[in-house]
Image (cartoon, rainbow, N blue to C red; front, top):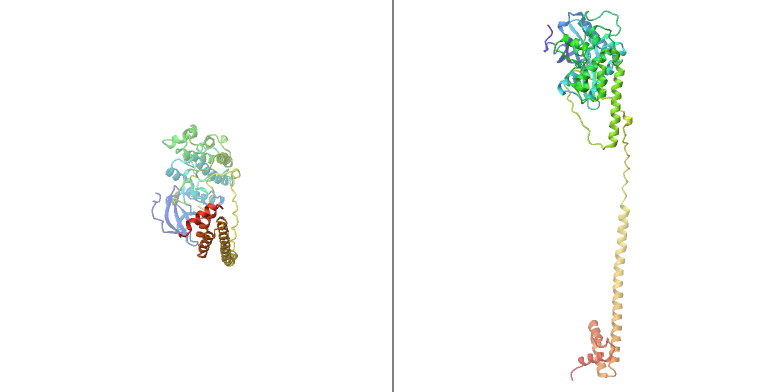
Length: 454
């Protein structure tokens, strides 16, 4: 009987330094706990082999293979294993980096079908992990959504790590197998035909499983699904899966073609390496970016969509890597910042104020003196003009009146009186009315009306 998912190990210290704080999840081989490495004070994930598996030598051997393989590969897309212990009073356990995020299985369940372009980025990172494993002559043999962990990163997008190398196998390994004869290793919905009929396995076997994961992520269903395992295995061997472009019309036909090639029943018709399949995905992504750049040149940019991703408290991640495919950034126009003009230095206003004050000090007295002098000159000219006018008018009046002494005397007296009073305006009017025409009639009328009554 397998260990119940409870607090049997919570709070326990394994290996003298790993204190288990809470259960994160369970699998067929063991349970995963969040723990604290007390000597370093860091959080880690500890996978403990199920108690019921302890008596199974093959299970213990697989557990050791998982630890050794993950530690040996050291890929940024493979979960990092930092410790493994077996023996003593503690159950066998391995220590991994603690990741935050979701398995691909959980991501599909929570979000439904995923955008094909996002899935292509996830697939490229899975293939990067497998390329590292295959270069070390290691087959995973159990790639499935449960063993693909996706951590969200605001800067990098989806960061993908491959888990569980427990059933990994060395390619062309002549050593004793760690599975019993006739026992299938893997998960039927993601197993390649050669895994079922006992043919030789190689890197292309893992690529079939990757294609099955991508198919499910964009369509919401596995390529082939049967009611029982026997029919499932027979379908994998003999029935072709529905075309992805028909099941998921929203997926790009070129992406669908890549996935369907990976699901080919003949290994020779599939991609021959993880690098080949990854290269096709990246070429598709590059072509899409070129199209995006052309659209950007033709149309103004309007809005950049954003996606909020909630990180769950499942296992695992450090050393982030991009979850989207590399962009052809060289094709994108780069906006270079225009250097700002240096701020102008404020001008000193001191001398301006000094000049203004001095100008006022000098100008005001000059203006006063000029005004007084001008008024004096004006008065003088007025006086001169008035005196000359009176004299002229008197002369005209006297000339016009002839030698009439009485009238001439009256005219002269009237003018003198008005002038003496300072009423030059009245005097001028009197003389002018009488003499302005320069004839004797006007003067005679003036003198006649002004002549005293006898």
